[in-house]
Length: 274
Image 1 (tube, rainbow, N blue to C red):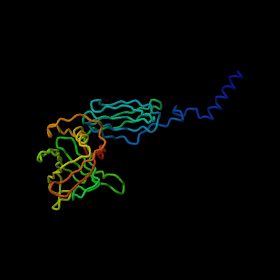
Image 2 (cartoon, rainbow, N blue to C red):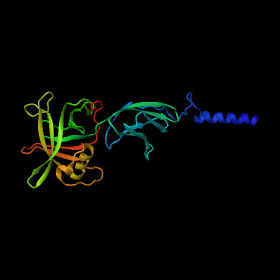
Image 3 (cartoon, one colour):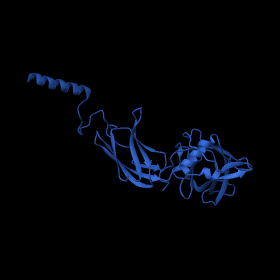
Image 4 (cartoon, rainbow, N blue to C red):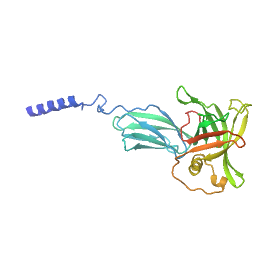
């Protein structure tokens, strides 16, 4: 009896020193409550995933998708032991995803919206009157071939949440002598001086394209925007490694206008796409 009392007192002393006692919710002190910074996510159709970062809780997360026809979700833990949930869009629409911490019992439900796939083009340098430096274009893979033009909020060091203008785009190939040159036609509102302007008439502007790595840039355009280069160029393409240098230069034939930028998979501000 005395030995059992001494053993119990010793265990109590060790727990008080090491913090091994449970809290009121039954959670061990070294596991923080599970919660998410945001409960709304947008995912584009296509090969790119969107991540929900898990920064608290136990990291032992189970997932329940309300409509598995719209998204696919998986818990991922990399070598650095960072945990995140990877979301892939399967079909346009809205659904919910419930994340449950299997240790703490905490739950978070997020709304997930799947949009059309899209590709960004960030302009780094330009002398063009409309397409200025630090402008971001988003080319959307939908039937209308929508193009959104975003400007930068320099105070916040991020894109403005709403587009400055909206237009359309089209890729095509033009035969120039013995050379076939890829082009991008942008239709956007422009004033009399050719400047990008809201509530102005739509005008078509053709830009000849050149690339630092033509094979990879053409491949990412094909993958994200469903551009059939085989049909346009009549030159079968083979799959390549993931793009590395996505620099794309645009020039206006017969002028000295030159725009240099890079294609990117940067996300569009939320709430813009259907």
